[in-house]
Structures are given as C-alpha cells and as structure tokens.
Amino acid sequence: MDEVASMDLIRIAVLSDTHGAIDARVQEVVASCDLAVHGGDIGGASVLAQLQPRLGRVLAVSGNNDVARKWPEEDRRLLVHLPEWLEQPLPGGILVLIHGHQTVARDRHRVLRARFPQARAIVYGHSHYMVLDDEHEPWVLNPGAAGRSRTHGGPSCQVLIATPTEWRVESYRFPLSVSKRGLRYTGAHDDAQSLPTQTAQVAVTPGRTRDR
Image 1 (cartoon, rainbow, N blue to C red):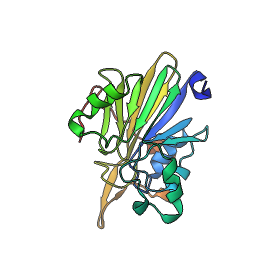
Image 2: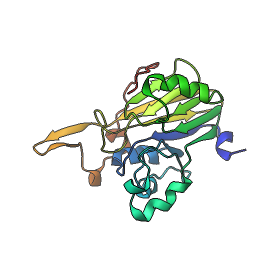
Image 3: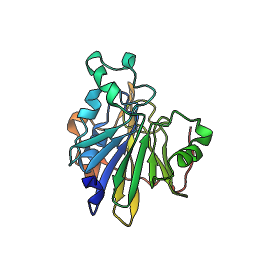
Image 4: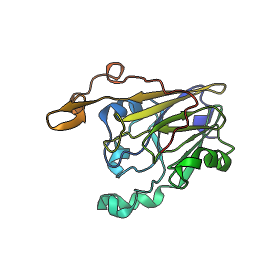
C-alpha cells in the first residue's frame, strides 16, 4: 500500500496551469502541505523543482501546452514521463488528476465522473477558473491558474485535507494590484511575507459547476 494512503491526515497542495511561472505565495502554500499535485500546462521542469512539499513528492500530468516546442530545450526529456492522467490513493479514497482538455467544457464534469467512478475527487485544470463542485461524488476540483497567465483575478490554488473519514478543501486566491506600468502581483516575490499574512482563504461556493 502507498504510505500516503495509510496516513491519519494529509494536506495536498493542488495547483495547475503555471505555464512556466509560479507565484511565490502559491509556493508557500505548497511548502505547508505534505504532497503536491499539478494538473498540467506546467511549462518547464523549473516549475516542478520549485514545489517543495514536506514529503518531497510532486505528482504531475501533461497538459495540452506541455509540448516540446513550448518547453526549454534542456527540460524536454521530462515530457515523456508525464502521464495523461494518474490516480493517487489517499486516506479515505482515491484522488484522480487530469488536465481536462480532452473533453469540452460543457460536459466536462459529467464526463470526468463517468470516466473515473472509483475516485473520491477528480482534479483538472485547463480552464484557469477555480471550481469546487462537491454536489456529487466524485467531487470535481479545479484550482485555477497558479502562474501569471489568465489568472482571472489573481493566482490561485487549493488544499485538499484528507483523513480516513473526512475530506475538505481550502481555496486560496492571491490579489493583483494595479501600477502605472499595468497589472502586477501584490508584493515582491523576493519579499514574500509569511503564509498567514500572504494567503487569504476565499470561499468558493460548494456545488459551483461553472467551467470555461
């Protein structure tokens, strides 16, 4: 049995769609977790190297933009090791990870649930919109975009907290600010504050199924 599945409690950082850059505040969330999962459109090996969860394990799948011409030449060997989808046993159930571009947005949640009925939760990316659809099992989660591309209000991620009897999700979005030069991140990456003051947990309405 996977050692992760036998833990009494585990915190999993859930992120996606970095496209070659990751916000420092998302990195801090990852560092507060035991395990990290990336839902694709990674953009380069350096992004994965910057993810440092406590157990040192980062799971990732391939997105539609994870192709050789869009990755640094020195990183392209990694592409063959990225699966289309994967499943990870956790305390209390199975987490499935897939990028989600394989299905059209309108039917995506229904198709994912039909494809992975064994899962307790399914994580996908691609749309860059944060989603928490927990009306039915499997839950369907989208952490939004954790980098600089189409963040729809700021870089975001989620944390799945799993025990043998209960799962819950925390959602984080980090603010953008406006300067004379245009839109930029609030707070310099080199001067990131501590996690409690940098992160702002935001409520994502349970059962929200909006997708793009």
